[in-house]
Amino acid sequence: METVVSGIRPTGNLHLGNYFGAVKNFIRMQQEQRCYFFIADYHSLTTHPTPADLHGSVKQVLAEYLAAGLDPEKSTLYIQSDLPEVAELYLLLNMNAYIGELERTTSFKDKIRAQPDNVNAGLLTYPVLMAADIIIHKAAKVPVGKDQEQNLEMARHFARRFNHMYKHEFFPEPAPFNFGQELIKIPGLDGSGKMGKSEGNGIFLYEDAGSIRKKVMRAVTDSGPTAMDQVVSEPIQNLFTIMEQVSAPDTLQHFKDKYASCEIRYGDLKKQLSEDIVNFTAPIRERIIEIKSDEAYLSKVARMGAEKARESARVTLREVREIIGFRPF
Ligand code: TRP
Image (cartoon, rainbow, N blue to C red; front, top):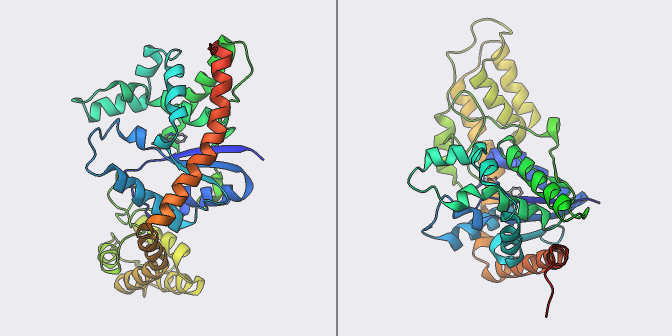
């Protein structure tokens, strides 16, 4: 069994793309590995220093992941800021993180372009905190998307550097991990590309039926097939791809046949797809609402997660302090 760590941003709600991608990945991993999943609320301050409702966003995201299937009995599910050890490890790692390498990080360059009025030190040292998150549990695997690969590479540097500087083979090097081919990419409804928060084309798990229907009915299509067995255009293929996940196989086949024989009516396709999405997300949405109103349950989950995470973090930190040379008087 390997140790897996991954952080979740508290600023984004789960959409279908996340559900069939990262979340499915997490759910599968929690069966097989020793998993630590946490909500990265410290990190969120680098871009949102004065959040309107920090606790509320953390609660929402926690409820969404639980509703989607993360099991607090199988994995350790916690809030980053409940782990003071991570802040201490971050401090120690910062002593061996160099301004030059941090300034060269792509995500730092992107962020200073996006928020030129708030180029704070936390933004610069974002990868150091992320490394602390990972190596505090001596993780071997980190499930992350492409956009986080460089940050993960930095985490490997910091782990290796610690080992060399203090002459201890202490931290394992965390490797990126995903199920690759098996990971389903859910496209957006705007004709091309994938579903994403920043793309503004997401269908969210918490959305009500009316809002989902409206979004699906507005989905981009084309002017329709004009020849038998014509190659399916991208916007239509995207609708089929979503249908593949949420609809019955014969429903999908029905519309594919209609397309092939040039009899398809996109209005019907969208109506069917929106109903199938609504049916798919409705129970998850209900669970989100139910979990969010259950303060006792949420607090139990958070407390249990913090306890388990701290057990692991405390051991690592004790050894780190020892290795560096801190001694009690
Ligand atoms: N940076 C990650 C993101 O933006 C979130 C994150 C924080 C993370 N710490 C982590 C991911 C540790 C994996 C491991 O998505």
